Image (cartoon, rainbow, N blue to C red; front, side, top):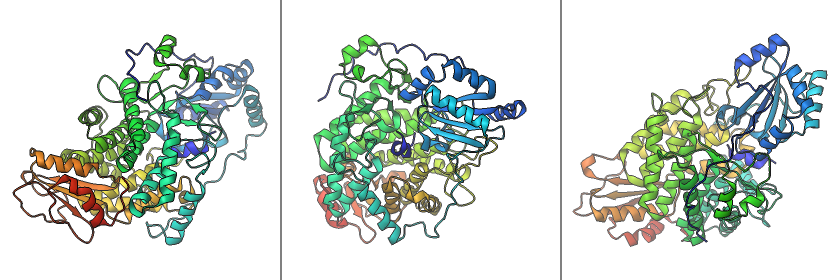
Amino acid sequence: MTRILFFLITLLTALPSSIPAETSPRRTSHLHWQPWSDAVFTRAKQEKRFVLLDLEAVWCHWCHVMDENTYSDAAVIKMLEAHYIVVKADQDARPDLSNRYEDYGWPATVVFDGDGHEIVKRQGYLAPDEMLSMLQAILDDPTPGPSVHPEAKLELPANPLLSDALRQQLTKSFLSGYDKLHASWGTDQKLLDWDSVEYSLDLVRLHRDAQAEHMARQTLTEQLHLLDPAWGGVYQYSTDGDWNSPHFEKIMQMQAENLRIYSLAYAQFSDPAYLHAAQEIRRYLKTFLASPQGAFYTSQDADLIDGKHSAEYFALSDAARQKHGIPRVDKHIYARENGWAVTGLVALYDAVGDPATLADATRAAHWILANRALPGGGFRHGEQDAAGPYLGDTIAMERAFVALYGATGDRQWLSNAETAMKFIAANFRDARGTGFLTTKIPTDQAYTPHAQRDENVMVARTATLLFHYTGDTHDDDLAKQAMRYLAAVPVVNRLPAASALLADLELSRPPLHLTIVGHKDDPAAETLFQAALRYPASYKRLEWWDRVEGQLPNPDVQYPELNRAAAFICTNRACSPAIFNPTDLPTRIDKLSGLGASR
């Protein structure tokens, strides 16, 4: 699930004492659904049929409604069986299809001819009469309709960094897109847009930007309306332009990114409401989405009973809900979703230093390494993938490894990050220079693989930070290739504007650089490291140099030999004298870096 979709589609409580069995399996349709494959198109061409793809999400209310109403309607079934081959795919299981049709929401309905050419693309729920009308219109005229547009040509810039004019244009879009009345960006669906809030936090820290602080804090406060008061965790979004009409599904990306952003905000503002939100999301993850092995499941359904609105159910207490049952949990374990979860948990650990939170993150990362790793450093999506490998899995785990290295100083995590980035370069880099592809394996013979914006934002930002940790210019090259794609027209004009602004901001300057010099079994060094970890900056290069491990991976600074643990702050112009007292770190960082940290 990607963020662009969200712009385009329509006090602590106790842990539940036990989680009862989930509701019964989903209803079986009368239609003979086929899996997505080239064989479907071969058959369609031979039999002179069309192919209808129902791209759904297993947690999606309107997908359930469409199954219950439209695909169970006798007239629709008769029409489909006579002239179409029906294909159903879960977008969480197929990131290639999900990225290809992300602009159409779930359910997405796409009809193809036997050669794999698109005829119609429809967004959201289609009632039986709408479906019948569409199916008949295709029979009457099978030429592509107005929903099928020619692909826009990418205009790649020579310079990966945004021009001043383009940066000003994006900044204007970032500011004008903010909903001053209800908070957050956009006026229809309400959710925490994590890149926009994180960019706002950066503006506060770097420039004491009062407008950015207001936008971030108003959004963080309003997003609390989507926090489940009984079980923790966050609902996906709210409709109707306010925060009072939630869609109740709980998907991993929303949990992980809300957890990360609330943790960053707590570190920066010390607001206990933000810490409460982060801890409540962690509580939900542990109670509902944690597998017995320590890795995380994918999502929880919006509906207790497929196709029936659950607002009354989610208004109940924990005990009252349990009497009715528990919405279904999708127990697939995907590398991508676990990478997101690990990064969010590490952000909470960075903010508060709870060892149990770090243990949750490392346990999930180790499980994915043991059970989803591919030769060469990459990751498959699930236990068995129908296609792939997919960029999303490896870049999500790559980001998690970089976060774990920054939180622990354990060089094995950095080694994992380096091999994962090499896998990305070898397997997803587009030879045409247009960023990094979701996969180099086409979804079908008629489709050329494409890059996807959110994945390339993650490549640009993660490769940039990795470059500063390793000094390897290949990482810098990867970041710049991803950034050139992000700066290309029309990609750069997609929402949210903050995604490109964040990537550009980080590529154009070094991160905050903190180094602790001292043995890792020295309590004084540990105290300094924890103090550096707490300092509020998402773009931070924090290292722990224990001389017995040899030189640092990127020895671009020479530190003096001292007889006790010390911290050093380095900018691109100077390094601080040794700092021995952890309470001195924040003010020394602010002074040397010229930052106005808001805490």
